[in-house]
Length: 277
Image (cartoon, rainbow, N blue to C red):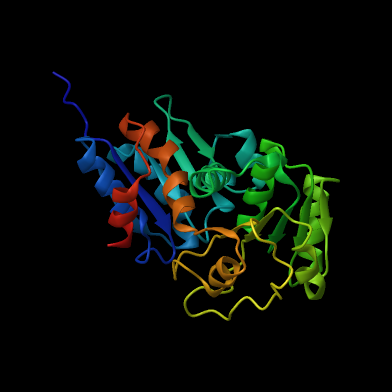
């Protein structure tokens, strides 16, 4: 007689105690009455591969991956989706029944889903996008914007070479603008995205001049602590449509939950409340 295994999943990071994902997954498991558990796992860089390879033996069906491991897990995985390869990082691992580890990146999916939910009138055709920052989150955002059909992206970062590296990766739809000129691209942009950590609790504020923002421009911040950053407050005061960063965290978790626990969850007010505590 074969006993049915309770599916296990979790999130790997260093540090990880701050993660909101366990609250979200516990909420969904309870809401949809699914068997399973989702746990936070603090894993040092040197232990990453040994930990990941041991998880399937303990009943894990997959896991999320957060900083600083999102790039390294691509080297450990046996196969990866095209979007994970393009972004150069993975945030979702699926442990397949044939023993292979499958890596995916759902950050871009989460970003677009959050944008569409928070700004229902948003469409790729409304005009150029301005992206502030050139880290891993920016790679996911740019890849997703191009994928859904945005034709022109202005990219600005405090260190220009990092922005130019992204321009090389994504091609002619991306135009690099010096950080000191970042405020000048806002007037021509229908969508503005802050992918930096500037404005996050404990971090310096985003100092880009925002007087170029136009009424109706869709402005989103990937920072969700605080939920309404000064950047979003000023954009709202200028008549922009603002979308906070919490929804991206929620939406990027949907594909993993569906794959691991067999139900596609809804991102609704209850899910937000569960994460906000």
